[in-house]
Image 1 (cartoon, rainbow, N blue to C red):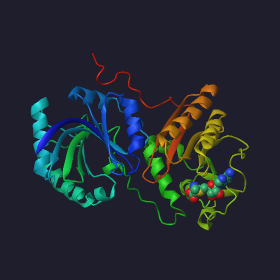
Image 2 (cartoon, rainbow, N blue to C red):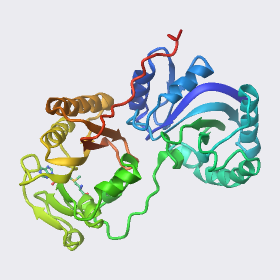
Image 3 (spheres, rainbow, N blue to C red):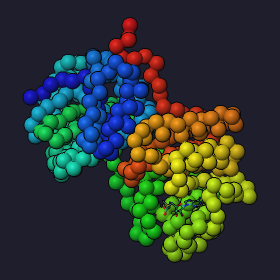
Image 4 (cartoon, protein in one colour):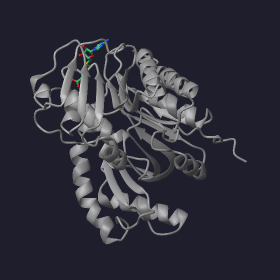
Length: 374
Ligand SMILES: C[S@@+](CC[C@H](N)C(=O)[O-])C[C@H]1O[C@@H](n2cnc3c(N)ncnc32)[C@H](O)[C@@H]1O
């Protein structure tokens, strides 16, 4: 059975539904109905009418949400096993309601990251394999439909599925928003994977090319055993790795990493560097202040950092840290871009990227609220 729905859905790390829900409610306004069950890995927002759902979806920007990995606007919801024919039926029904043929530029078939959701991942792959040629044969799915949305098919445990759309510029091309990236052999720690993900999720291709040129200088605070330093060194950047602990031999063997045994909160480079990166396991507010000071004082142009969040009230902690950076940069009168994301490789922390001297981007606050429209 297929039911049209006016809903938006977000995916997150299971256990972070409250944080994501708090962000969604703050963004959308209190008059919406939010559904989130702990551990499910998704949050769902019921809205009163299709035009409200469209208006909300159109106001989402790439970094509006910290705790969301993926999102889409639901066109229809079905029960059963989600065969290609079921998805096609939803698209035909939607086309009848709104007029015009279904059009998508891209297809993502996904399921949440919960235990039950992961068991659906092989079915997602199979459905994607069978559905894609059927949609292409109808002319509904093509990379040539440049202005068209991304089509999402999401399987959820308990035999339900959603068919939805998102803006490809703001949603993730990876199922569930989980970046599947290769890290070359020889990485000294699991953190190397995280920094790889951060560089792909938080920076655009153009930004990566510009900021990761060989020869750029990096200060890595809290560097040991050296996964982050290794990631920059393997791209040819010159790293000063600050930590009292030992660095792994493969990091030193790159010949591009200089180990300085010092306190990361006191260390200052003798001249400005390109990057400051910081993975010290210290209170998030303290790291936020350090990041804000380095950026405001012009010690680094690009900063990549972790904010380790305390148990409970993690969304509020992120807001406090963001306000600290905003205050430091405001005092210095500098433009900047601040992007924050709870990455796949993050657990009780979020990862941030700050670029100095670029247009300021803060999360889009919606000016009008659903239910208060005239
Ligand atoms: C999570 S580990 C960093 C992992 C590293 N990013 C990697 O990729 O291998 C945190 C590191 O911060 C260091 N650390 C903690 N407090 C520090 C401080 N005040 N100054 C310098 N390093 C510190 C610890 O010694 C530890 O090696």
